[in-house]
Structure formats: C-alpha cells, structure tokens
Length: 129
Image 1 (cartoon, one colour):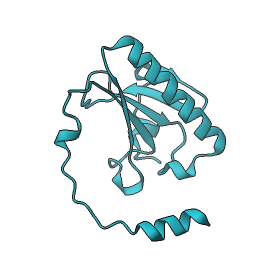
Image 2: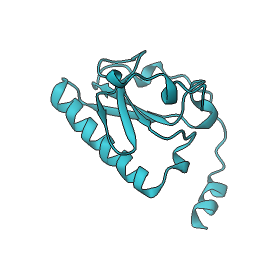
Image 3: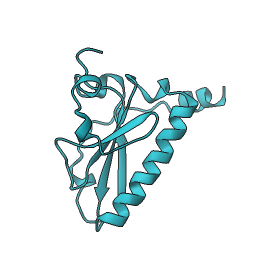
C-alpha cells in the first residue's frame, strides 16, 4: 500500500530486530517505557489473514520479546494489544503493541469503554461449528 507508513516510511535503522515475517520498532508515541511495535512485513489488515507459518513466527517473537523486556526492565509483565481492520490508525497495517507493565501502573484504571450486549449463545454456537 503506497500510503501505509509501515510499508513505506519505517527506516531500516529504526528496525532493531526482525524475523522472516516481522520487524520490531519502538512505538513513536509510547504509553510506557519500552513500548514496542511488532509489525508484519506483509500488508495485512487483520491477524486472520496471517498464514500458519506467520502466526507461529508471531507468537514465538512475542514470547522472545517479552522475555527480553522482562530481563531488561523492572516490570511485572507485558500487555499485548493488537487492533484489527478499521480500529487501526490510518496509514498502518497489522501490528502488535508490547507494553511493559508494573502491577501498580494504573493501566486498566484509565480505560472507560462503552459496553455492548454480547450474544454469548450465538458466539458459542459459532464456536461449535
């Protein structure tokens, strides 16, 4: 995509780790020290588009990066967050945020989401198919 910043505007020197399918950069607007982005090299708009090989690479890379963050920073863990399709920032494609956390950082206290009804039975029926 010509207007995708992940496809066209990330400089090679900003990528400090990469695998066959992903590259890792520091988030340009971090919400915590050590906030990383794990970005697919291919332009996907959803995790559902990744192949089995790419999904395997994703989870292994997440685990490796989490262990490195935990060895490097005084944190209690890492929160993973990925947005899908129309929830992503304009001009980006599939990526995962790795956000270093401490147990008293107030991360969840600042969320104020509108809750929608969840049709649990419909969801469970679909899972059984």
